[in-house]
Image 1 (cartoon, rainbow over the protein chains, first blue to last red):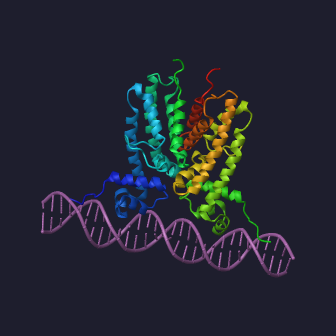
Image 2: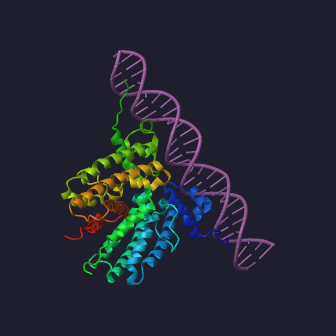
Image 3: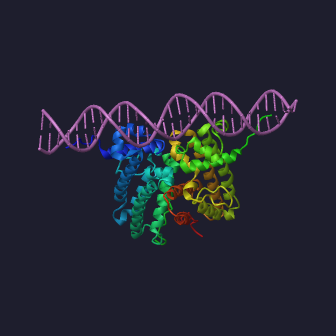
Length: 207
Length: 207
DNA sequence: GCCGTTATTGACAACCCAGTACAGAACCAT
DNA sequence: ATGGTTCTGTACTGGGTTGTCAATAACGGC
């Protein structure tokens, strides 16, 4: 009946996300997005309603990927919960893990949580971005807290510890490594931070 | 001999810092800086060499304030070291503390570490900003590590723990709360994160 | 094969921005 | 007072930005 789209929507949004990640929101022009995605200006406006629309929809796509991967990586039987937490922490510290085995990104600066980066840059004046970013955080917090509870059931974490508090703390550390990574610190340093954090998790009092 | 400056250099840089904090680097125009500082374009260029110069010098001023306050807040006798660490952590979580008793900022978003915010936004493509930000981090890391060592000498922290690792971890948490704060979480939640982190510090094995 | 419908493209206009140039003002030494 | 020097504000320019528009291309039902 009518001419079909010549591009894959998710693919375009992902390319735009990479661009926003690399240059920030205010640092990327519509022409940059156009070059990164291969789409002309007109198509961008027709399909996504301009720069801000691209951002919102790219963040929604990011949120969807996050909500799909994180629970999968953290859920499972109680026996392996602590080890899953350990593995997730170690990977997250080198960039938000969004796929099973692919390392998140070549350079650390481009691997920081997309939602966090946008929230820090424009969240103060863009409540929609702020809300979307918070949603991303909530999904992760829920998944991590559930994993902590599993580890508690298995006797690997102090049952008196509040699993939600612990989840918030762990995610705060992960987000903190985004910043420390942006300073230029080595992956080894970030791994060391993650290991230190993991070692401090409260173990059961009496064995 | 010649006409003297009609403005206070540090005062101007501080106003510019506030503006950069509120809108980001790419989000503030020279006119914004002009309005925030009360200086005309000409003066800005003559005194600070344009927008980028203003940023660099504002960051240098921030670094200086940081290097002056943090060691003062953390240094002292071994007996009080753990408590100083506690107090610093609790305050830092609500914004980088730069003065003795003034609370850092009214809203949390504007209180995030200036250096960290700039490093995340443009550090990937501006090595000078990246270096300055890292300097800020190093000053804090040194001061915190020294305080950890003092607490270890006093028997309040496990002497087997690596004080540098611990300092990095604590600062990572503090930087992480900048991000979590930007999501819009309440001060109470941030305090809770800080208390959780403090509670997990490794205490001496046998009392 | 034609036609309605939708995507795509490139160009265009209005606007904003960084940086510069110039003219005037303020100060101090003499 | 006056002149030399430096600060201050404003107007200007070249470049880049965003959002829109009209013309063109592609597809599928008929």
